[in-house]
Amino acid sequence: MMMASVINLKDILYALTGQTNPKLDIPVSKAVIDSRQASEGSLFIAFPGEHVDGHDYVQAAFDNGAKIALVEKDLPEGLNVIDLRAEYFQPHFLNQVTAPVCLRVENTLAALHQIAIHWRKEHPIRIIGITGSVGKTSTKELTAVLLSQKFAVLKNPGNRNNVIGLPLTLLELDSHHQCAVLEMGFYVPGDIRLLCDIAQPQVGVITNIGTVHAERAGSQENIARGKAELVEALPPAPDGVAILNMDDPRVSAMRSKTAAKIFSYGVNEKSDLMARDIQTHELEGLSCVLSYQGEDHPVHSPLMGAFSVYTILCATAVALTEGLDWEMIKTGLANSQLDLRLHPLPLADGTVIIDDTYNASPASTLAALEFLQTFSDRRVAILGDMLELGQYERAGHYAVGASVVNAADVLILVGERTLMIAEAAVDRGFKQDRIHWFADSEQAALHVCGLIQPGDRVLIKGSNSMRMDRILRTLAGGE
Image 1 (tube, rainbow, N blue to C red):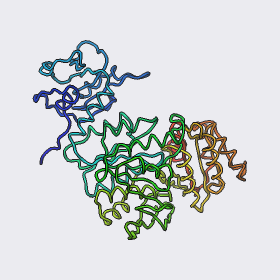
Image 2 (cartoon, helix red, strand yellow):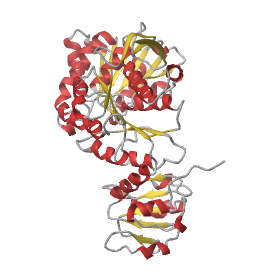
Image 3 (cartoon, rainbow, N blue to C red):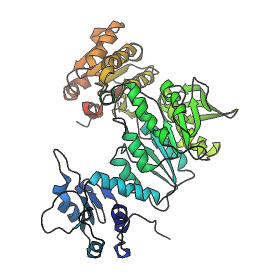
Image 4 (cartoon, one colour):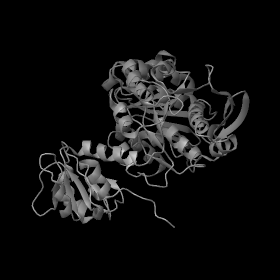
């Protein structure tokens, strides 16, 4: 059985200098930025930082088995360093390379990008880029599940979707991969353009435009411009395909920003792929009918909440674009067990915790509350601050508070910003004595068990830095 071809020292040197040496065929097992994750054959990339500098851990990475380190600073004597900087590099240096070796470059991030661009070019496969304010991780995961029925798929693990995580993922490409599904994160305009320059996607998926990261980007309009960089970067039709949400006006407007083929999806607006008869089944997922090219296809998925229909639409649109038939799509949707948002955790006393502690924005929190509303048991919403909303901070929290009235029987709030949720809830008639506020998750964790009753349905959601997972562990008996 042939081994899959993986990136090696020879490829890295060629990417950085245009020179190589056939004797340097030293395979790289994985690329890491944390010396503790290094193992036999690793490439360790040393990034400078305000609090932690990777250059202080080069020897530790070598001790753990790394064979190559990418560095941009002077290192202690005794380490084997080959200087690849333009003003110092000479091709004959490559005859002196022995592992473990440090490769000195001007900038380790730029060097990582160079290596990833070269390695992607060595693999002329289909790449699907996915971005959006809400739902991009779920969409990436479900898309990978569907495509894996026909292709060998690479995907970025977790939310490794930024200017470090995405190129690290591309370095995992080997000769057996047939396509890659890559989530692309956005913080400021230009981010996604850079990621596209590295990954060169042929298919671009936009889920929606929300207010998350507005604190950095400034406005939803700026966020939309940043997300549109994905469809702007696609090749023209027929090779390029832009998969757009017609129910989001800012996304549907992106049709004019690309020369790629448009594949539209939606629930409310006329689209190439539409969902109707959407039915939620509490903890048993959802079902709907997908309409495409004049035919109806009933589907079922264990994904929970009516909003998950958009994840199903996105992933199905990619699957159809990439040539999967409806039997494969239906099977993949029905069997997709994704450990993502809205993860139910049943407790011995009949309580069910709905773990949505991954992150929070107004749109995703409203969707989670809509799901909580479907339960007939006593419903408890434990909500933390939503961060990075910029000018939309008050409007976002107020909208969540206004929706609590119909979705929850008890409201537990964590953080200063959630006082705006409480204000809106009371304005809409939610009783003050059913609202419990705590300054932080540590305080909330001390009191939350006394506020929950057996058989409750408990939603926990907040921004990552609010550490809502502390409350989850307390209720689950872990603390």
